[in-house]
Amino acid sequence: MCRVSVPKVISSFYEGLKDPKAAQLDCLLRKVISPNIDSEYGRAHGFASIKTAQDYQRAVPRVEYEDLRPAIVRMMEGETGVLVSEPVRRYFITSGSTAKPKYIPVTGSLIRDKARAFSVFWALTFQQHPKTKKGRILTNFADSGSTFNTAGGTPCSSESAFWKMWEASLRVDKKPSLPASISEISDTDSRHYTIARLLLEQVDISIIMTLNPSTIVLLLNKINACKDELINDIQNGGLLESVNVPANLREEIETTFTGNPGRADALRNIMRSQDPQLIATEIWPELELAVCWRSEMLSPYHRLLEPHLSSIPGRDYITMASEGILAIPIEDNVSGGVLATNTHFYEFIALDQFDKSNPDVLLAHEIVVGDLYVVLLSTSSGLYRYNIGDVVRVTGKRDGTPTIEFLYRVGATCSLTGEKLTEQQVTIAFDAASTKVSLKASWFVLFPGHEPLPHYVILVEPTQIGENNNFQSLANEVDKQLSVCNTEYESKRKSQRLGAPEIWVVEVGSYSKWRQDKINDGASDDQIKPIHLTRDVKFADRFTVVERYDAC
Image 1 (cartoon, rainbow, N blue to C red):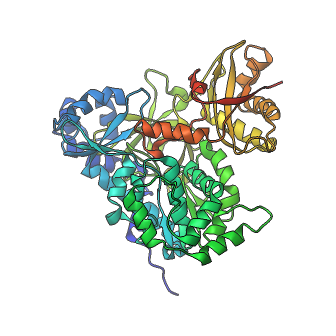
Image 2: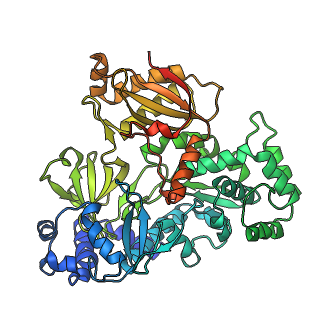
């Protein structure tokens, strides 16, 4: 019998899962403590004396980003040896809970830690989906934002912008699907049109990968909204004259894509069906796998993708943030993955204890399947016992190591009269309600309303205005489903302490405009995660409301 060779990166990864306690202690001492003994932070907290996880917990306080901001500001101004001994090569910019962005220090060690996690993910993916190696891999094509330098001369950018710069050396796909100059297109509509135009001409895409499924939704919406113009471009070559792109990119497209009548006819044939839409798996017949985050919070976007991708497997991407890696997926069609015990050091606080002044803090081998936890992260890049702000659920164990899935951000709750709604409950309730009344929504957000009685308002952007949009029934059904998800909500509604929810319908395209405003303010496209619950009573002021409905 022929024995299949298993890549070393995979065998080493699985070997590390057998003893999470030992793997985590090794990670703590070798990656977090030893390299930073002589840093200012390490000296202040006695890193030289730390030998166990318990020593670490006694010596080092739990922190939020704002606790570290003064030290990070000093580092950005050019001071060395503050949080870490190693030089800081870059800062990843990410949104914070305050108006100020967060600047995450990035060392060479952190880059290597993350790169190893990416290697494990892709090695597992290709092992389980060998056909995907033959085609093109469409990797994250969202806008990454710009790069600038700190006062001390260190580059700052989004994480995705950094990895795109390293793409040539780290690329898993040797044949890039899109030219690098796509990132030079500042106008979102023009960028989406240009991406759609170039991808429609290609037939050999085997994997489509973005962090956020909403990015795929936006691409496919653009393809179908502009399908006639796009197919004409493919037929005749070049790019629609009204699309706003840099002159060098337009010249590159006109030189490379000179006209492909056969491909244009094939796309027109796809539309000669009962439903004249361009479906992803028909556009790209070699498409074998879709990779993007699959948490419950994003389920409405996955429902919008079902007509396009339901016939092929879906795979969650690495559970991660700019600060670090949490989990690596090891199978298809599930949310989350196995805790990355060889990457960073993790601690866990049970969600019901999080608000206590002295909660129990558990290690990776101590957490319980089915329970919810807030994660504390320690990395090789100067974050020590750092509250990353994520709530995760333990879904099982693999060879002794926990598997976890991201649920929502801690603090993503709202309570008008003691009901304590969570973002997860809102997502589940709206998804169930919209399915029940057969209404497709591109986006929704729930926020507090206060007149005439405290109640909740749900902003809804339908996929189309005026077609099978039973918003009155949706308002009633959301009310019912919130009661199912949250017994305190049900109690407060029955006692009339909480008013009936409202549905406010916003213009089609509102979500895209909101994303563009965020990008204009400095966020990168892939950092903009859909929110489904906010405490901001003025959130709707950003949008044009076209219809309003009360639950009966």
